[in-house]
Length: 552
Picture (cartoon, rainbow, N blue to C red):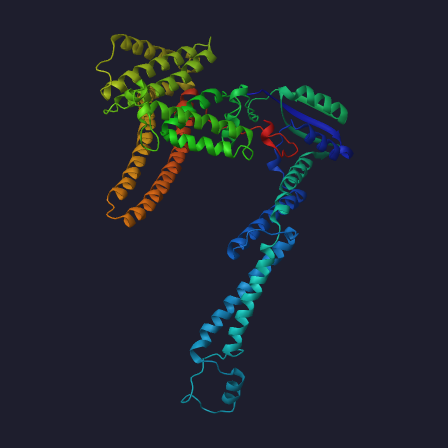
């Protein structure tokens, strides 16, 4: 569900502003618009954090350039950046020397001071030696010596940077972020004479805790429901088993609007299925699962649970389809699902994809109808579900899966059309929303494309399997073509390399396809029918930085 929000106005004595801000941070239940703060103290805190990040980047870059792995020197970000400035100055000096050397090199290593005296004495030496139009300040050998020294100095400074302990600087990131947040909140608590006022949002589930904290702060407050035109933050609280989806939403940077629905449950169920079908290989799922288990202590709890579910679903799909590294296991060949999915015409797979698509989209419409009941627009949503059912039969008929459409389905379509045209717009809204009725024919036809788009689950999964099969064929052909023991050994090494590189590349492409197609089917096709625009912004309470997310 999406937790209801209360708008908060908090008033406290100006003299106790810092204490109130600290208590609000300790409470960790009030959403403040921290991004709008831009005062001097906030800018200084952000600058300090930016310097720390830049210092770490400088350290890591110096290590890459020099091949150094680790550093232990205690250098502050300011010291690292000062050394980086020295490096930049030395690089500029070296570039200048290189340009001067390039100009002087064609004329050899002569003494510019002596040449100047000869020229001033009126001696013509053009027949003996050629001099540059502008004499250099020092001779060529001295410039080359200076360049070597400059490069050496630069390396010494880089070694000092690379030797810095970046872990000490990185460890300060949470405190720097907390400082930025505190100064931002302090700025937002604006002065109004002898009092200070701050506004924000608080979930109703934390209202009692806030009231107790407000009494201890000796602060006045006003809590009210959101008014028209206000956009509260969205706090999604799915059932406990589906709560890891909050991590996926945060990772994708999406949130439903406050007035929309929490779709975490169907999102997770269908996303797991999409993940399995798009990867399409049980062995790849096993690799995902083993990697997830190996990183259990490093992964946040929510991401660990999600990846276990997704990779387990992929292994299960591998069993059902008998696909393992693009090959099959003979012992699983007799399973009914394997035989059914192995249909050479691919009609069974397309039928499965269309069925998944229709169920996904019809779920959205039926859900809308139930939520809107007893309002008359609920009938229009049930009508859309009927239209999707009709288009499902049409889609299967187009590709030859169904030989004909049952007469009863045409009756369902007729009744559904009537419900959609009669109840999408109420009579009182005809002047303002009447144009929507003119778009209904196009919207109805687009449902056919929405269902067909789910065939990507079959197409992308099949492509992944075929790529794996081709790499397997390439690897096997190398060994079979070997003509001698030496060549056999050499080809065996090449075979292993092809298998490793090929399947690693295919695995990466499968993961990318999940990000593209599985996300799209949930956030576009399903969400369009459900009416979720993903235009909200996530509830982010002003709180102390968390160092261990595994508590979730």
